[in-house]
Image 1 (cartoon, rainbow, N blue to C red):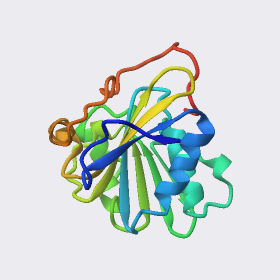
Image 2 (image 1 turned 135 degrees about the vertical axis):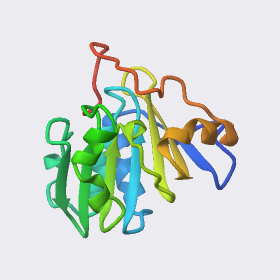
Image 3 (image 1 turned 30 degrees about the vertical axis):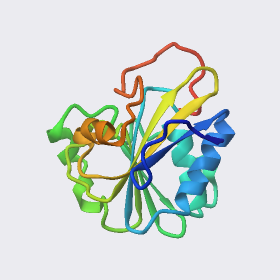
Image 4 (image 1 turned 90 degrees about the horizontal axis):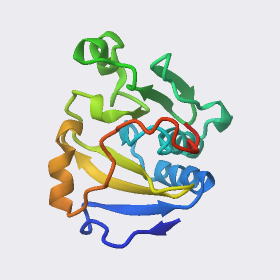
Amino acid sequence: MTAGKGAPEPGRGSMCVTQSEEETYRLGVDLAGRLKVPGVVLMSGALGAGKTTLARGIAAGLGIPDPAAVHSPSFTIVNVYRGRCPIYHVDLYRLEGGRDLHSIGLEDFIGSDGITLVEWSERLELELPGALVVELEDAGGDTRRIWILEAAACPGRRESNRRQSGRRPKGSSGASKRGKGKTHGE
């Protein structure tokens, strides 16, 4: 795992490059050590970018007994795991909008206790000051570029946050990459 060149200004965030699924997992373990409870991690990136692998690492770092049990909750929407605190793993990929989001009761637990990990956070319509924003990009093969940005006001406004930090990851729109090689754990 290496720090990337041209990373955002200090205090705004950083960029890391991982060369394998294991390194992406270890980055998640490291991130877990920096999270405050309650906390929210907003993850975005195309299919196969490594969001679930990163979530598995964060869960391991938060003391979940069996990190292999962490899988993408694409069909259940929310999985709850028990580590040193509750871990809510949310996948918004299949949601169509605000009405669907409201129906899962996300507001009832997000940021209330434990750590909430949100995949496909660009579909989230809630204001979440203080959330840790993580944008993952498939850079080919097993290589991932991962931007870790601090305290986004709202996922829908991250575009302006990237402009302020001087970095904009290519391909971070969440567009599908179906059928394009390895899925890096998703």
